[in-house]
Length: 162
Image (tube, rainbow, N blue to C red; front, top):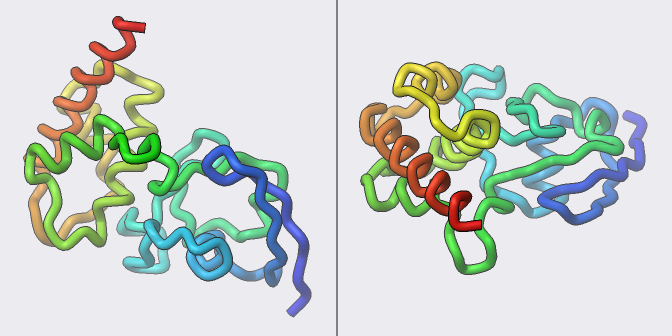
């Protein structure tokens, strides 16, 4: 299979990689760039474990080809924290016990951040709708929804201070 050189931005950093034209973005992120936060849960775009944003749009990286990233902005779970300082969503997932095994957690966090970037004051229904593409087999969803609600509140407070 032919390979193609791709230039893109991942978590704010310029990146180049060569990949076969049929390789998924998920495999490129994990195997070539060492960004293992996105997980392959299903490989069919049904579970959300591999969620990333591509030009600000939430996507399942298992359904995007690596070559489609050319010239685009990718954000992954690894780009959420600011050094050692957790993103409010990450902190609230811990504080609200919204994680257990951790396989789905990165996808939920990326999906929740995509929601809050567009809607800083979502209703519970809007949160549940935005996270409907992410599946969890361990925690149930109430703690996750509460964590997103708490993070949204924290983030609104932070934005008022600026």
